[in-house]
Length: 133
Image 1: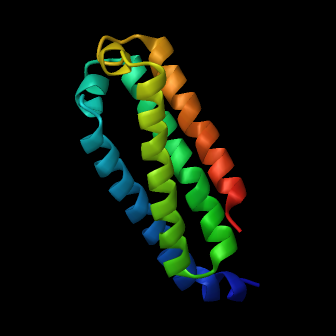
Image 2: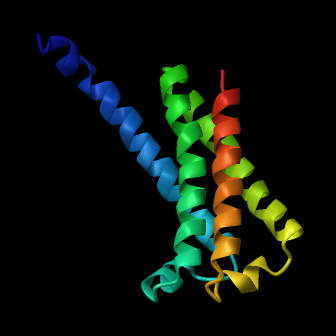
């Protein structure tokens, strides 16, 4: 009864660890790219920073999850992770172009900007996930 699960545990562990590693790498890169410290702002209770970071993480995790399902190969999954990272960084650039003040608004706690950036990130993540074949 549990044999298929037990036999699948090594593959699960490999894919899960790789997904967590990709998410950690993306998080570190995203936090370096933004000119404000989301972690510091979140610790101070800045909801706009929390929402925008949560959107970026969700927008990245969605295509990673789909890559796990369709790839059956860690290297292919990592490749899609790189693509998803690039997409999310372009989303951040697009948000800055659409709202040039966003880098000031989020540290000031302007929730509308945080929601806008989060929504763009999640939408891009959904589209990115849907395009993975």
